[in-house]
Length: 162
Image (cartoon, rainbow, N blue to C red; front, side):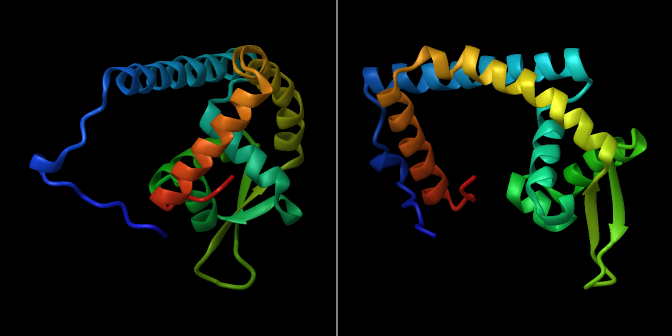
């Protein structure tokens, strides 16, 4: 992990006008994009973006299961946030929690067949939104640059690459 230097107040490198414009466009764009994707999933499937992402991760994992601690780390969420979200999904029969077979203290989240079926339908809504709201609004070169920049940000801050 690369450590970011901490500048003193006297050494702050302020954003110039163009950088500030880009930064604000990024913040505004991310806010409206995630809000719209979340609203679409909630309206059509009763799922939040966070819940949808959990289902995606579980669906891609071997046996559709991931240890809760690993799931929290992969999503950059706190363990308590994951526990709360999984509890709701479990009440609805979408996810099941089981004791980890290799470690008696660990708990594993498992995507149920009902959850997988819900994900299979919700995925169409999500991908349609991603395409309509982002992909189709950018050139291939812009998307490549966006991916490169966001990967560099994740790498520099120590987050996982998705």
